[in-house]
Length: 202
Image 1 (spheres, rainbow, N blue to C red):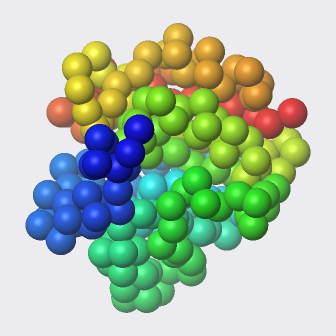
Image 2: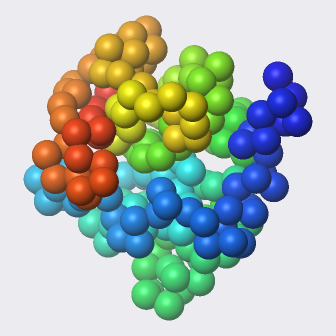
């Protein structure tokens, strides 16, 4: 499949969405599911990578909770906005404009945590097994993926939907499932369409 066949695979597609301020996935604040998770943690810290970080709202949450955060996104406008917001808010987080699939091998085994929110649903579904391998490669042994999966059943995309069963099947080949539950405090337009997962790399 080429970028012409699937324009959402192109950085230009996502950059245009940010330039036009057509980014409905951007909540303007951290995802409620992540806010709940952070509030339930005893202080742990460690290195954490946010894949498809957008304007950095989730990254700021994790940084303020004591994690050493790196955010990665395809779109230059998103990274510019995240970097500027981090500086304005005095948040210590590093942002990188990159195709996530180009992070390996340079970043192999560098992270204690990988955070997923609206990235898995944005890539072409044919790339999902590759995405699982990417996350596995980025994490240290014993590292964890914390993820909010968009489990809607609408056709087309992006955002491309998934199911809890697919999440278990795809990630279960390389990770140990710690938990997979509906998000109880999603924003209204996503109510019933999100699951929170924690997977651990052996």
